Image (tube, rainbow, N blue to C red; front, top):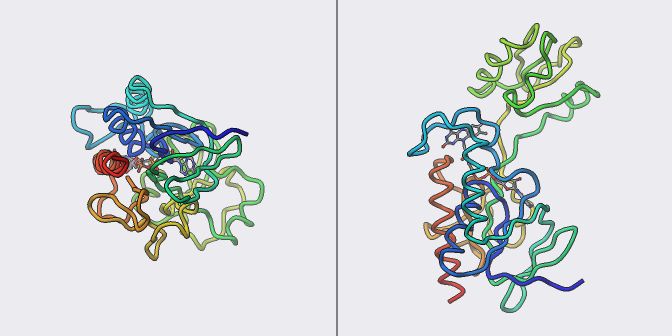
Length: 257
Ligand SMILES: Cc1cc2nc3c(=O)[nH]c(=O)nc-3n(C[C@H](O)[C@H](O)[C@H](O)COP(=O)(O)OP(=O)(O)OC[C@H]3O[C@@H](n4cnc5c(N)ncnc54)[C@H](O)[C@@H]3O)c2cc1C
């Protein structure tokens, strides 16, 4: 299979990755963005976005659509595929997906975070009942049915309140408690973890698995940059994801010369 060549590969089409692609294209370099699920990432499940300057009450899905349109309009390529491996060569990188291999000059890691999964015990307990990580996305499927929310933080409280307008009963339990027998669906809200397995061994990760980088978004591996929620940093929001995307793209373009 022949390799396809691009200046920059961006792993993840969340707000960080799509912003990076916009900056790479505006600097005149070619860009391919890989997305294994939905462009927009985490924010797609939000019905009303806060703290994004210039938009009040826009849904995450609509905001994502706008950013995706802007990115594609500037000529970035979007590939719906999971990146399974990134390999460092002498003066380039190979990026692998199930369908092909790409040769690129620089890589921007923008894989974000994913929801933390249930414990082994609770997974067993849940059996073949539906498991969801987003009440706004899936709550409507359980109209007048009993459901359970697992988690102790604010997100779990928010999910419980949201579902109480839909379900016949909402149990709210902690991560080590048994799943009630009559609940038909389990809503999991026990935090998020970085989605960085593909970069493990290639760049430095902190103890929690976040990619370590300086304020230029440069990782420990020259030519690999990081943007957004998968970076070790104090504030994970849309504006900081977009800001990282801009910085990482700018540095990648400088690196390519
Ligand atoms: C419910 C919810 C509501 C929120 N509300 C707000 C808000 O109102 N305001 C605000 O500022 N922030 C909000 N946030 C936080 C905000 O959504 C995140 O900070 C931001 O979206 C992070 O963007 P990102 O691009 O870094 O990562 P993500 O959005 O996580 O995107 C990463 C993308 O990479 C893809 N990916 C990962 N690994 C691979 C791989 N190997 N191959 C291909 N693709 C891959 C994923 O599928 C994903 O689409 C909210 C978060 C949630 C969960």
